[in-house]
Image 1 (cartoon, one colour):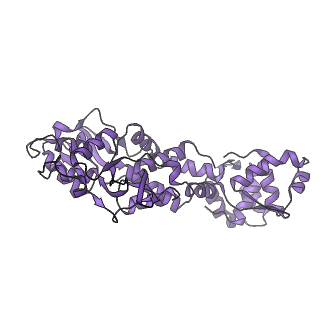
Image 2 (tube, one colour):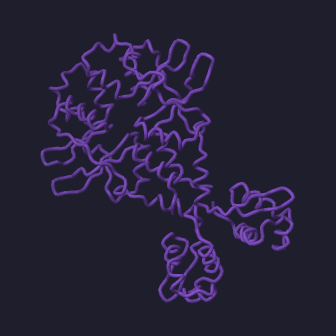
Image 3 (cartoon, one colour):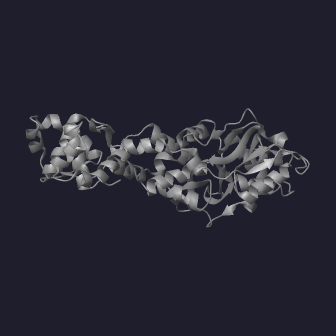
Length: 209
Length: 209
């Protein structure tokens, strides 16, 4: 975020004279309160200033770098997750492999007849099964999946940074985004290392506070 | 990076009076030039100020947020890449799968008898071969690999952000880091979506300009 000259001046005034009312800031700049309103709104939303009713504006003392980090910390799963790719637990390993190729994903969520999450399978799980000299179309996927409760999941209100840490710490490529229902966990999306790489690229390419 | 009070004051002075010499900044603060030297060095290294010999200090006009982004843009492959995991092109697909499980990686680099890069295989390639009803221990890995020149590679002086963009745009999980030799490309490492996810976590957890 590039601050205008006037916005820089406002920050200076608040830094040295805060708490200060909008009227007093306007006076010092020989402007009307109405003219200043958009700038004050932007500076408050961006986190440079804090406003308290009947007291005035404070300088938060935060640098742009801290504000950027704080903003990234607040990125939530719901803003970035991909669509869920699910397979019934009664499906064969062969069907699961076909779905993985068709959808071009690295991890599948496995669900029961109530559409609730019972397990996950990764490309690694499928590869292990595929070299096992078994009939893959006769082998149900639930036999080879990692099953509840040994699955790491996240919810849409979780923070992206916490999910990224889980992917690294647990050495997994992706995890399901779930919603609690009376029958169990409904799968509503997925977050993968691809998601995090996209967030990283977007962050650098399109940096705004 | 948290600026000290004195550093903030220096930035203010330079912003309003630059170009200004170190002596003049010191005068305004009632300090000696020697006392100020560390602060000026820090502010110049961090990019807030710019110094020109015989002219003085300028304010660069960059906010912390822009400086952070600029810093991330300069992250290089050599600071972050993992060790290379390679397999000879004469090895069997079965051996390649074993290596992938042993080393727990998603992508292998395939090399010739001169240790030069000739191809790459992903978990997806191996899974496709594994369901193909072939004798995996009799099938050489070079038959199923993606081969040069259809491989995306990077070099140690490349920027991490450019590699991250390639991973997204080409929909691949990782790519080899190579070095040019008279015989061809020597594989010296790999960058994967795991690498990028780690950089992202590190960036937020340990934010410094």
